Image: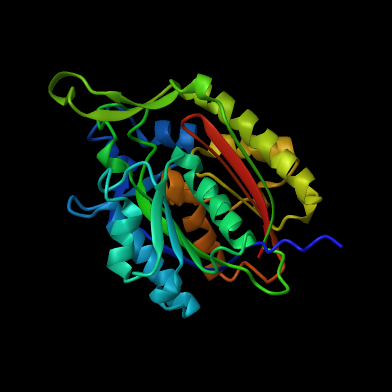
Length: 322
């Protein structure tokens, strides 16, 4: 008889959002745009912006502490910390090491993982492999971003999209629980120019900023997210109608709407918070999951599907049992 796989289950969540709210009406005064233009094209009405002295690891540590408090897990029980981010405090030490020190998880190994907006799923799936292999028992996964630090506030095509924040989950094997049922990951490096960091111009030529070919990103994202979700559902032996909540990457309402239509699923089954937070890259899915859990909208045994798309280009999906 084949051995039963020890899958990882999410046993706790946490989130942190900076205090400052930047609304579309404020952006109207900063760049040539309007609330109507932003809402009609993205569905975003406001986003959070970190304080100047607030780092990615500061936000990640606060989200991590909330997950630890929720679970009653001592920081010293954490075996591994994986941080998904494309805006690290420093190239080295890793943001994961900074967070380890801030939360007192001194027995944990720690490293960063970078897959842009798909980073959290890449990190969560990586963590699950350590659980399945019996190597680690308790893993902290954090998605944290300070995208305001790489946004060109003169580029109306990108500055309206992004926000700052952090989300965290703790992964453990739960006896009697199925945890992560299936996943799908992918990348296409031939499309690396459609969403990238590029040098600024003029006085900002020594800095890099987010640059995006919007129409192409939309086309690629809808296609990749739909294919990945369908493949993941098939691997899990699950029908879309059996999934209680779809939690997509919160990039653009139009993208989410198109994915829902192609999957034949009502938007009522999609968790959407991009109107309040914008695109927080790797923090989007864990923040949305935390909000869903704390709103009492999750019951043990519920099936969830995460699906995402990011620069690289990268994409991924996951079906798991709550």
